[in-house]
Length: 402
Image 1 (cartoon, one colour):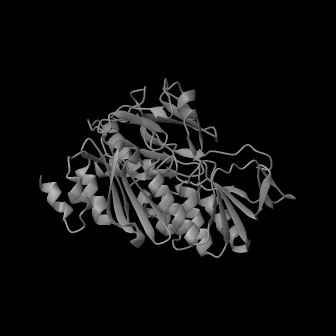
Image 2 (tube, helix red, strand yellow):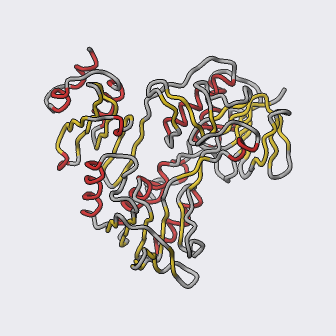
Image 3 (cartoon, one colour):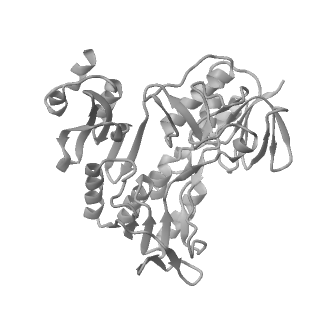
């Protein structure tokens, strides 16, 4: 009998394999990952793992023993170079051919690279894997100045760790504000003030045009000016890993195109996680999400259907970011709202911003406000009285009973 095969060994693959076993699937299960580690969590890499607060065991999704105990064949350091849908097989870089009954593509994504002068100098890094962070954390111990290219969540999370570690930190953002692509001007201003207040120098409207140094980076060039540095971390977005799927003839369009059952254009091949372009019936549009909750829920959906089930994926997107002692938890997309309602006081670093469209909640940004975040997830899409949202003395739980 052919196996259930997972290509990739991240959140989605690890969860899918666990779900299949929990559902009683007793056939052969194979996870093929090109890294040397079992499936692990990526969010802590730019936060607790980089700072040293968490060791490897806390980063792993499950202990290595989990896979052996459940007869899950986890093959690390194994790259897949070809998918053959006609023969229902995959080929590894070692030349091995593995037949599958159903295949899950969970190849994730990779950092978008800079193709500018000096990009190949030592000291210029990207943060995506455990190996990346191991190198960066070692470099930080002897560095004095770090320059972060990109003012998105990853860049700002690294900035918070670096400045707390005693480094001089510069953040370069080519847009007119940090977090411009993912949040409102008001939230950008809040985080700009937060970081500059902790000693981070933020340079907006500033494009990185090159790196200079004698073998090792010494300066970041920004047009006519330059910034001295001995460590650079680039965080300018990611690219979905769709090449295997595309080469196999699967439909791809800003990700591997799947339906609400996580099925690709081949009925025997599923996909989940960052690499997918999927429909969201709640938002009434297709999305490609870089989100752990999305990867995990898609994995559960894919696993159920690989085993012959009929499960549809429909979830409100949510995300989080840890910077300093602040936890930001987000539901939905703030760009979907046309009215903002603030609950709490921004000056206390404990507040929530609700985003309303046509009288209904379509998003929330909650800073150190887990209660508001949890309730907002349940209120998503529901009509609300904005005066009650803004009133900190009003118990939001009352809105759940309507």
